[in-house]
Length: 269
Image (cartoon, rainbow, N blue to C red; front, side, top):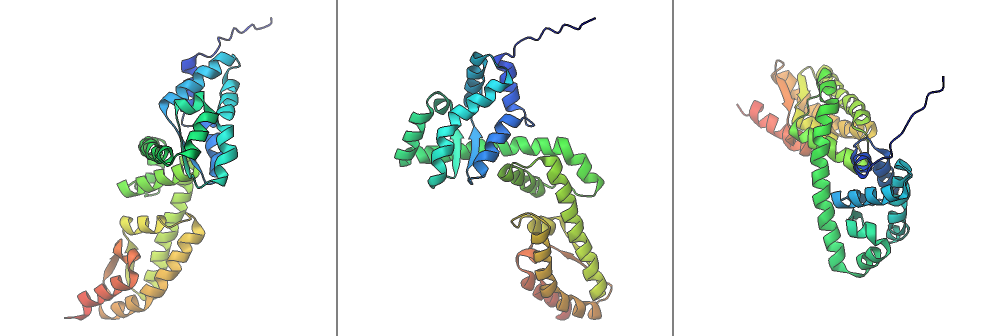
């Protein structure tokens, strides 16, 4: 027998939920488009609701969201890359009057300042939501690899997701690999110097904070640390072979100063 399905049209609330979904593609795709021009995008709740209302009027379901978002942001996407504007806070007024809003933004320093201020507020709220999502989505997974989400690391993680529009699950795997690379460097340094060397979570976070985030950046930092650390640690191993050196955050910020401090503590007696 044929199956007859009756599909109810999506309501404004349904469409709004799609826009607000952290895993949704409509807003994420448009953020990606603007990131290609090094412009960061954020939406007010009122703007998202207005987009949902306009999409509902089109009666084409979720496809209406795409067409409304494209229609609203096309003038900005066309014009802003040739300006020095680096962020865009999309408001309800922009949704209702894209061309007029763009003209005011380009013509007024005060409008640009308001745009930057509003974007900062929206970005901070988004970062806090991202932090909660990261803990919920990948916190337990990271703990299985002994990668703890310290407050600093969580803020770093969320900030990078926000900057690059990366998915937390994808970034979690990268984070595990990078932390493992740093820890294995400590093991190699221990073996070559004959003294136990480990990195504190704070030191690891300092390394992870270097940009661009990735294996190449981490390896470059570690190679520099090896040059700064190795001779001093080998001398320390001769004096106190049973020592266990835990590299703090200052050991990353000022590696030579860190080694000098180790010498003062261990060679001045």
